[in-house]
Every structure is written in C-alpha cells, then in structure tokens.
Image (cartoon, rainbow, N blue to C red; front, side, top):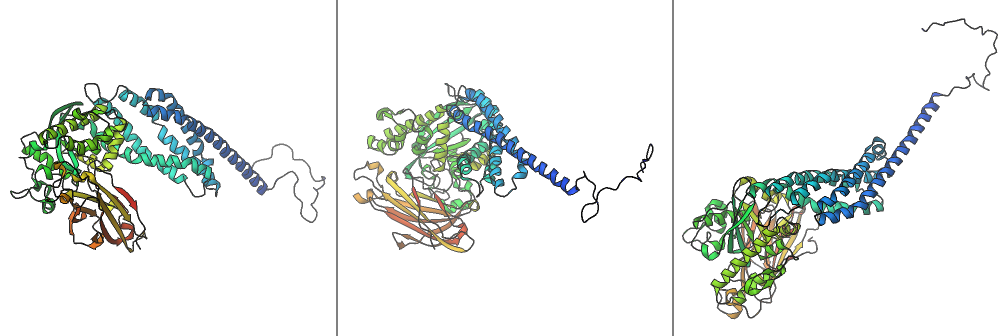
Length: 610
C-alpha cells in the first residue's frame, strides 16, 4: 500500500457529487474503458488504411516508372547493347525493390485478407514481388554479359571464348532459379475477382515468363556442361552427321555426309569431311544397345544390315543412333568421337535463320538459307543427275560450309532460337559419350529421346523409307488428334489420324525414284514403315488404312508401346492411317510429335471422341 504523505484534507463538510437521474452517481470527466478501446481501435484502423494507401501510392508510382523504362531496356537487350542498358536496369531494379517493400509490409499483407479488396492488393503485391525477384540480379547480369559478349563469343579465327561462357553460367543458372518464384507470385495474383484492368496488365507478363521458362531451363541444364564440351578440360571431337529426310528415318533420315570438328579450349577446327560412301565397309554393333533394340531392328550379324551406315538412324532415339554412329566410325579406323550431332538441311536452315546472308554453293550460286532444304534434297539430284560422285562431293562440301557458317555465327540469339526450333521439330539432336553431358542434354530436351511416358500426354510418329528412294522429300504429313471427351480416370476412347500425300512431279531424277519398282507409277511411289509410340497403358482398339482394318506389329521400345505397319504412298493420293485408342481419359494422348519430314507436319485437333 502506498503511504499518504502530508495532511489529510477534511472532506466531511463537502457536498456529495450530483447523482444521475434514475441511477447511482458516476464521476464526471472519466471515460468508460470500452470507449477508450474503441477509440484506440479506430485510430489503429485509420493508421492501417493510411499505411495501405501510402504503400499503394509508393508501389504504384514505382511500378509505373518500371513500365515506362522497360521498353528502352528491352530494345537495348535485343540489340545486345548491354553497357548502355546498365543504368536503366539499375533504376528498374531499385523501383521494383521499392514496390516490393511497399507491398510487403504488414499493413498491406493484412489487407490482402479483406474480401475482394484483398484480391486487388494481392495482384499488385504479386506483380511487385515478381518484378523484384527478376530485376534484382539484372545490373550484375548485364555487366557480366557485356564483359563476356562485348567482343562476341566467337573470334575471327573461329575460337569460342570459353572464359566468357564460364562467366555466363552463374547468370543463367541464377535466373533459372528465380523464374519459378516470379511465376508463382504472378500465378497467385491472377485470381478470378481481380479487376480487368489489372488482369490485362498482368496477363502478358505471365505469358512472357511462361514462354521463356522452357528455354531458360534448357540453358540452365546445359550451361554448366558447356565449358567441358567446348574443350576447356581437353580436346573434344564431334562427328557431325548430315542426315537426309528425303530418305526418311525416325531420327531425321539416312546419313549422307559427315564432318569431324575438333574443339580445344574453344578453338574450332574442321578436321575432315566425307560422304556415307567412305563408311560403306564399316559396321556398328547393335548389340551394345541391348536385346530390345536388336529384336526390333536387327543384330548386325552376317546376314543383317542393321549395323550399316544407312541404318544407324532407324531406332526411335538419337542417343541410340549416336552410339551406333560412333561405333561405326571407330570400326572404319577413325578416332571414336566424343559426341555425335545429327542435323539435316531443315535444321541447318533453322540454325542460320532466315535473315542470314546467302551461302555460296558453287555451281548453284548464292543460296538463301530458307532454300537450303530444296537445294540439298532436290536441286542437287537434278543438277548432278547421273553423276553421283560429283553430287556426293557437292553435298559434303555444302553441308560442311553451312555448318561452318553456323559456327561462325557463334552462340547468337538467332542460332539459339533456331536450334530450339530444330530440336523441337526433330531436325537436330546431340548425343555425348560423356555421362554428365548426356544427362544435361537429355534434361534439356536436346538428346532426341522419347522420354518417360508417365510425364507426357503426347504420342510420337515416325516414318522409315523401306524402298530406297528420295521420294520422302515430296511427302506432306497431316496429323489429326481426336481427344477423349472426358478428362478423368474413367475409360474413354480417342483417335490419332495420319494423312500422307506425295505430290511428286512426273519427271524426277533417276536417283530419287523407288529403286525396287518396275513401273513408272511404282518409281514415284514411296513405301514406308509407319511407327507410333504411345504410353504402354494406352490400348489399341484397331488400325485402319483408308478405312479398311489392317494388321500391325505391336512391340515395346524404351518403355513405350510401339505400333508399326507398312504403307505405300502413290503420287497425288491421300493415304489415311487411323489408330483407335482406349484407356483412362486423362492418360490418352492429347498431342503428337513427328514425323521429321522435310515438309513440317500439319497438326490439328478434331472433335472429341465420345
């Protein structure tokens, strides 16, 4: 008890305080505790609203500055003006960080839980957080890019700057690490009740991030392996196999020419070029690929041609073709390559890009890159009709010249984009004997493998020319996917349809004709094995050709169900192959890749199958 100090006043004679009407007396000048609490809460609410409003203004102004500066930065990046882009990148990073801080404080986060209003705040907050995640490392990344790429990755003497590549590896991997976070922030912001004005601002950004996610993941998988692949740890030898889809195979086409390229500490050296004729006496051993492969395609024995150069690409996967090609090359008395690159004229044209300067192809003059497929797969046969030795020399020289032009361009944006397109369409693939490099190539989708059927809802189609000719140049495939009507786990039906049409001219060089035919019509009629790979849990109810049921061979390859049949493709007539499939609705194929014909397949989606 606190003691009273001093005299105690006498209050006995003081009047009592007034009494409230109808009740006991209450001291004047005191506030009820409930009122005090309500007042404090009101003040806190006002402070909270003000804090949210201030944060919103700060974030909005910062994001507005970012949106105004972004076009100039994008223009500098596209033009590879990395040094000039640096100041703008720093300002954008600072403004993005300001927006993220403003929308990351507790008043804003608490307001995100308010119905409807919270959806709008979460959208702005998500955009701010995504911008900050992506722009924070941008100034450093641009400085590294300017240092590494300022003078170009490939010098005039055809040497790749390996140190520059090593400098870029952490930039690529860091952005690949950050991108999923940014995409998640934007995805969380895209809620159904977000105002249309916000959705229209956020949707293009989300779409752009989605479009770069795949290529960036590819780059991040491959980038750490690039220095070693470029010879940083010792010389690497690459066998570039130039394939020809005019005589088609599941892996592009028959190997018609080759080049041996050596990379030593980034220095590129073209060691040797040649044609398939140089390798006619050599044999690969298909047995190295195991019993599944030999049961499907042959064991390469004395009476079996599975190991000859014309058949190294008949399997489903480019890694199998790479191992066979390296084995065959060693059997021919040459050094076993460290890696094999398969590329055809369509892939070469994609790597060079449509804006590349025309190539000087000797007797055929200056050839635009877009015309390379026609020159190498048709015009060469016309120009050298009857002189196969001269034609093979021409194809060898021009294929090597085109590939050297690709190397001279270095790791340009055009080459990288063209490479992605060529890989996606089956016209470029790489196999490496180095296990770590091969894992990176597979993970990046560059290895030309079927992959795990459990991770995709795609099927794969391929053609194999079984009557020697170059008629496949004229074949135009059209693929129709008729998906199931449902998407759940119940049993459903679907269908895939392949239409093959060959508008081959009546007058074609002798070497392009069907070598096994004995009639004029037969000489212009292609004969193909049609292969379809589907997940093993997808059943086949039946297969028809032009509406009539046909028998098929059903096998397994690399964990997939393989369905094969043979068709003939006469001139100017549609040949229609249809597979009727059955299985769980959610597991049936919704997309198709292949075949890797010279003419790109036309893919459409039909009506759903009930």
